Length: 611
Image 1: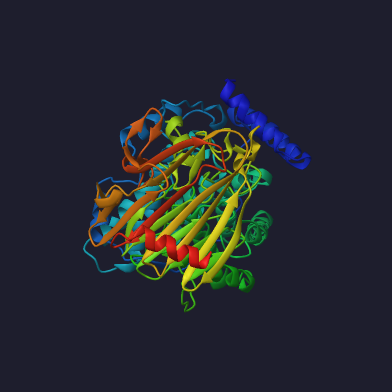
Image 2 (image 1 turned 45 degrees about the vertical axis):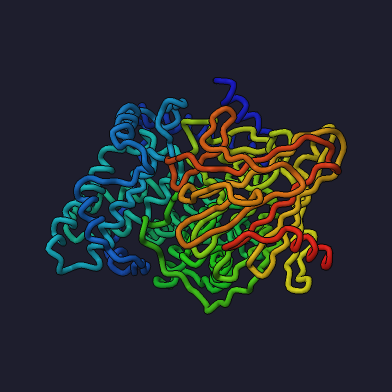
C-alpha cells in the first residue's frame, strides 16, 4: 500500500465512529468472501421468478426535455458522454480491467479520470434515445433508434459481467443505472423474452449490490440519494418478493433521512455545492414522481422542502438562468443532459437581498446585477468532500454576463496539483493568508481543520446595503489571524469591498479577483481596470494600496485558470495583489463600478456618513 492510500485510510479511520468501523469491517470481509465465491463459482446470485405484469402496471415518471434530433443522430453515430475525455482512452482502460474483480483494480495518476470512465457507463445516452422514442413514435428514425437503444443496453450488460471491471466500484453508479434499466423494460417493445430477462436480471443484481454497499456514516451525501433512488425503482419492480419490498422500504427511509441531512433548514446544500444540490434535487423529484404515480408511498412531506430548495437555487440564477459555480461540480445529471424530471414550482418573487443563514449565502439580485457572498461552512462534515475553501468569496454577473467568477472544479483524478488548486482559497475571490488554504487539504476529497464563518451584519443604511462577515480559518496559525470582509452595495451601481484583519504577527495577505475568460481586461484612467464582456462592463480599482497586477495561466505556483465544464481547463485573467504586514495595518479597499468608474472620494464621503 502506497503512502497516499495509507494516509487516506488513516484519515477515514480518524473520522469514523465505532458503528462506522464495524460497518466498514463487515464490508471488507463481505467483499473478500464474495470474491472467493465468485472466482470459485461456488456462489451465484439467484434471481427470483418475475411477474411480467408488474412492469406493465408500473407508471413511468414524467421527464421533460425536447428530444433533439441532431443529438440523437450523434448518439446513433457512437457519441457518448465522456466529460471531454478521449473515448479510446476510456475503452482501453475498461478493456484492461474488464475481467478483474472490482476491488482488485489499481489506478494511478497516469490512468484516465475515473469519473470520466464512469460517465458513459451511466448509459445516459440511452436515456436520450428513450426520450426520443417516447416523443417521436412517427419519426423516420423511430425504428433505428429503437434498435440502437436495445443493442446498446444489451451490449453494455454483456461487456460488464457482474462485479468485474471498473463499473462496480461505486454503488452510486449502479444506483444511477437502475432507473434506466426500468425505462428500457417499459419502452423498448422490441425486446425478446430472453433479452427482457437479461435486463431484469441485471437490474436485480445492481439493486442487490447497492443494498449491500450503501454509502452510510461519513460517506453519506449525494451518493446515498442516488443509491436510494435506485432501490426505489428496483423495489417497485420486485415488490412481489421479500427482497424487493425491503429495497423499496430502505430507499424511502434513506430519502426521508437524507432530506434533513443534505438539504438544510434554509433549503441550501449541506455539501456546499450548487451543482450537487441540483443533482440531488432532481434525484428526489424523479423518485417521488415515481412513488406518487404508482401509489407506493405518501411523499407530501418531501415536496415542501424540495420546493424551498428550488427557490434557493432560483436565487442564484442571473438573467440568463446561469448558476454561479460554487463548490465541486462534476456536471452529473440525474437522468441525462437536457432531460429533467417533473419539478414542482411555486410563483416566487425574488427579494433584492436574500440571506440563507444556515447554508451561509447572501445574494444581491436586482435583475441586472447578481452578487453572491459566501459566508457559510466548508461543506458536509466530517470529511467536507465537495466543499471548496472559499469563505467570504464573491461572484458577480452583470446583464447575464459572468464577470467575477468561481473558477470551477476541472476534474477529480489524474492531475492532483490542479485538483488541489481548484479547491483552494487562492482560486476564489477572497483573501489568502501566507498562501495557505483556509482549511487543510488532506486528500482530493478530505479536509481537516474546517473553519467557522458567520454573518456579522446585514442592514440597509440610507439606501446602501452593508453585509459583513468573518471566518476563523487562519486562527489555526501559531500567530493567528481572522479575516473580516464588509460589502457596501450602492443601489446596484457600485460595490465597495473592505477587507480587514485582526490577529498577531507578520503575514502575507493576498487578494484575488478571478475574471471570466470571455472578458477583456485593460488598464483605464486613474488606476481603474476596465472589465468588458459584450453587453456588460465593470470598472475595478483598489485604493490605500498599490495597484493590481494581471495574472494569467501561471503554473508555479498555479494561478489564473478556469474550468467551464468537467475535464476542461483554460487560462483566465486574475486581478492579483499582495501585501505583507501586521493584521491591523493590512487592509484592502476595492471599488467595483457597474457600467462606469466612480469618484473614490465621493464614495468614501458617503461611507463616512453611514458607518
